Length: 467
Image 1 (spheres, rainbow, N blue to C red):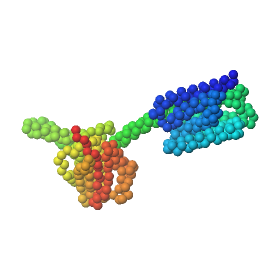
Image 2 (image 1 turned 120 degrees about the horizontal axis):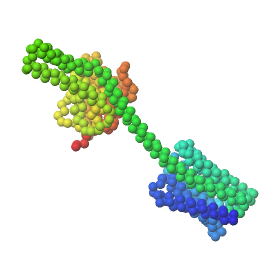
Image 3 (image 1 turned 30 degrees about the horizontal axis):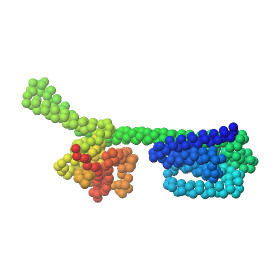
Image 4 (image 1 turned 90 degrees about the vertical axis):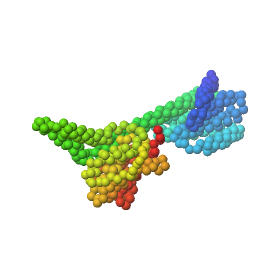
């Protein structure tokens, strides 16, 4: 009965291994290297355990030495499968060494069986299984430390247990207990029962490791996407705050610019009111005054519209933008400060539309940042000119903004655009950095260079495809 029970364990383990390996083979092309190692190992383990069951009907070479050598190869394949989860080197050298080592061990095993008998082969087989199991346990331990995969701990325990049991099994070579594989003593049944339980635990632990690995990878992808989305959101908020801060710096000029049409409206309204009270209202004169009020109101509304557009929400709207319209919008936005500082803005003629793929508001922010830097660099300069040039080079649109300011040192030119780097006393050092980030969204970039008479900022964007 005991012999039947041990053989039943071998048969059960063989069936589970073969079925598992065959199922995996249906998806073999879709498996990674680690899973392929385990699929092949399961098939070999199933076949070799069946060969062991029919030891009485087969030559000992085919039912003893070869199955033991191949089972040792199974243990190594499983360990290599765990290593492949975190180390992706070329596997062919390892597989070639494993194949040569397996053939050599089988030859040594058969020679020892013929010349030294069963006791020596028990030590060889037990030692082989113990060493390979301990190595696989170490591989699972390393993977657990690297990944935190909880099932790797179960794999480590299962392989460590198999190694310990095989060390215990080698004692039969000296005590005689359980020397026969299918012996009927309680020791033999206990040893093999523990061995096969740990072997099954090894299979399920590997399945658990791979399921948790896939879940962890999906979680990492989701977390990366969430971080990317959060980064975009925070980056957009930072860009909008930087626009607001830029306008805050120029608030005195905007206030002065708005004060002119509002004062004109007030004066015209008081004039009409006075004429009505005095009875001197002339229709033609009143119509002219009302027309002036309408014009001044439109001018004030246009100023407010430009400011509101510039600080509007940070939702990215990628579309075809005529860079000429962006230049005109930004020039109108900085006009009050330009007049106050007595700066000349020089533009080369641009007869045809110049289309780029961008967000109109964010592109205006880039140009606004560049022009404001140019304006600030020319404070106190004898000549205050900003020269705007647009040209096309291949599939690129190049917008250059040159000034006649104090220029940059080599260190400043190298660090310009780095986050939080600034040469201004009250600056945050984010304007050019945000500008570079904005342009990168549209496959563009920004660079600065000294010209000898100031600084030239070059904005490059790809040409938008024709509609």
